[in-house]
Length: 115
Image (cartoon, rainbow, N blue to C red; front, side):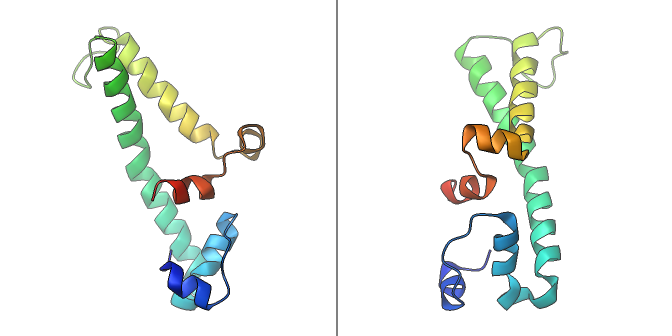
């Protein structure tokens, strides 16, 4: 997203949806705003999901003193791979509106919280 000063200068002060976030790029990217936003979100997701799921699996596995590591076979590190899969599924589920309404977690708000 453009810096907050650029957004507020164009009257964009409260972003609730991905469409609004893409529209905030319009002063910077013009008619390519939605394409730029889509590429950025997809790229971020491709980088973030494996890192976050992997770090969660390692953290839980180490805390529970389970065998951990991607070099281990799934049957040798069941807990580690379970947490890895669960974290990936939870991250994926947050994209669905039904889950967002139930949990009251918006992906756009989550992006804001991480900063």
